[in-house]
Image (tube, rainbow, N blue to C red; front, side, top):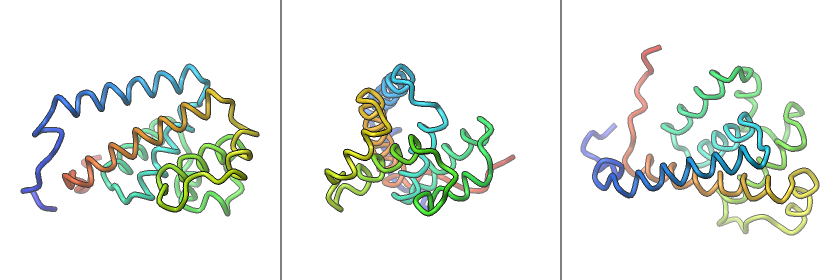
Length: 154
């Protein structure tokens, strides 16, 4: 990777600190809304996969492994629609975060919106949407700065 890239978090730390505080508030809202931590991490991992953010993929994969997530569920995440291993609430959350991440494709259709609300409460919907907004912001910061993803020292 190019060590010469400007890291926004180091160059203007005050803005990055506000983004981190925003993310902490989003995590609090998600917890209060009853969004399981595993679901919050899965949607962040999936958005990061869609955006190609290696740094955030590593972060959220590690968090899921540390939380006891199965290798099968991690491996199947890119094909979650074809997989039968995610429950309806997780599938609704993944649908929502995908629509936010791939907003250029038209966002969440009316049909998908109604389907998502069959499984997520208004508070859960709002929390997952904010998770999507936050992780997409972090993906852009990390990708822009080409944050290091060399082999981990496990």
